[in-house]
Image: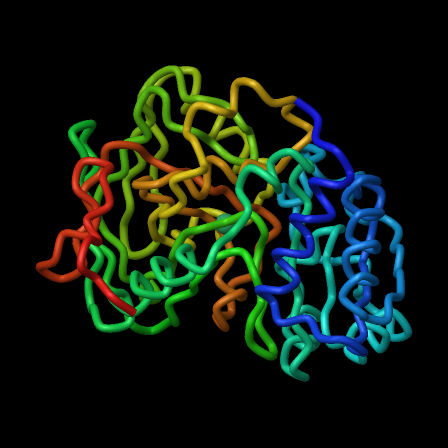
Length: 348
Ligand code: FE
């Protein structure tokens, strides 16, 4: 169901106010070939209403000939900012960048943030942006979960399907994604609502079972049969099962990169307005799957790079796989039990 410009302008104003956009600040709206026109035009109206100075920067797409899907997260590496000093200078000179293009996983993004510029990614379709509008309560919940990760040394995950994964943590920071940018140099993603970190390098061991009904990203499909992954010293060493396992093996193999098999970020969903069940309603090429990444109580694990967290691993292949019905422990504390978040009474 479509939404009106007025509704999306109000949503932008809400997010920009949470992001502390002030009169006279410089906002650059970064756009690309897949930017939603309604998102762009309403962002401009909202920024202007709040008194900001607005520039637009439209960059041409890259990697289209290499990527195996049209999802912007399906092939990482070179970005439209690589070697593009004038564009980089414009972004670095901004107080806030609204990324309607998808700049994620680029060294240039780190450079922009290091100067204090904020970046807010917003590429989901307009109706998803409005449905998953972030709140101060989201921030409290996600940052409280991040604090639990910061104080833990082991994340352990089990499920009735057979997952039994042990991930020592602490080498990499906990990342809070709550949907707005309220601090200088902060990156966030509207919509989101989850917490994550990366396992210690070469530290993860055990087994992950992607159960029937779990979601594969960027495939944007529900697994029809279980897929069993053996994890040894931080890497997936086998992918076994039926047709879905064969499809997954074939997808990763095409990157011809051993680093594609590394366990990347791990964490859990905390967004009650995001739903596991929405995927089947959406055109696969219209969105990037944030309902799946954020739905409350998932255990989200990933394969691929860790350079987002300051690690050395860069690989063009990146998979995000949220699992249902998991129990997640941080040291001895259960934070998710059979897919239900246990955070009552936790404060930030
Ligand atoms: Fe990811």
